[in-house]
Image: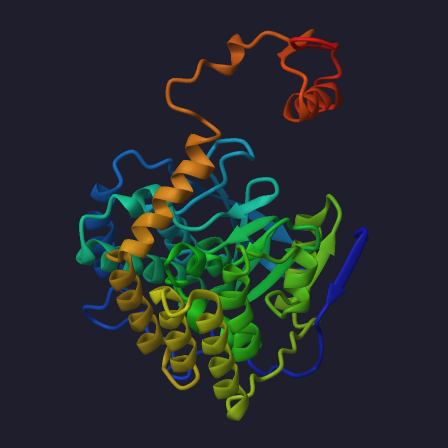
Length: 405
């Protein structure tokens, strides 16, 4: 079956095959590390108490028999059980569910690969900001950072190839979970792909500040992590995300997942070899960070700790090991959670994104009655503009009355 459109980045070179390749090798078996199963479970046990009323995004796994004799994939679908108005998010319980699904797949000898996708048109919108606003202190924030890293990095370092199928909106941690995968596909019409954390007063704290520059280079990383968030939270669509190098292949059409699975099978059988350019680690990296600092100065006047902390992380990603870089992200997240800038951003986000859409005490929508006619007292400039709006939106008669004709 052929999709409506597809673009691939394939070749014979295996340079930087998958973002899971590390300079220091796998770190999933270090004793006492949060990336051991025992250490990670301890983080989960500590963190679940921080978010008692979390809307849990379940990680539901099912077996998919791949074509071409590629074997069995454990396909994990992220789904919070709600419609498109409530995107998937990652709180402690959601991360625990994903961790359990990944472990189950890694423990099975018959599973040759792991896939991660989301409910229709949504992969995930990142961390649960409601839980973030309730953290009690720096240690709580550090725990959340370490937990996200510990779960996500299993996708790239667990010993089996992994595929991130970005089927729609993927912001913050939603993009980072895909970045940890060995390979990625993206829906070309995905509405929003990006790392908006700096806009809120945070940094990409679950691997993004290290994985992005090492995948697409420092210049593109500065644009995605710093410039776009400071430009009124600009994001990429799916095609632009592919063009930026965040995904290895893009597909369009309703059969996105089917086409992604076919491509994954071809990768696993060796028919397709992914070719990714090696980032320039010379002067270009330093120049990109310097340009980013100039942008941060002009946009924030030095008043955004998150912007400069993000640039420090990108600068460090040029030579840091994966463990060192992820530890630096944890520390940055822990520091920024305690800043007044983040508190103000979270309050503003809650006010604009949640309370405005679901005002406290508002009657249930099922009680609403159809509007058949609108009356407006006053017929001046503002009233006439309101009348035009009602006519266009509601398509009902509108009557204006004033003191005289």
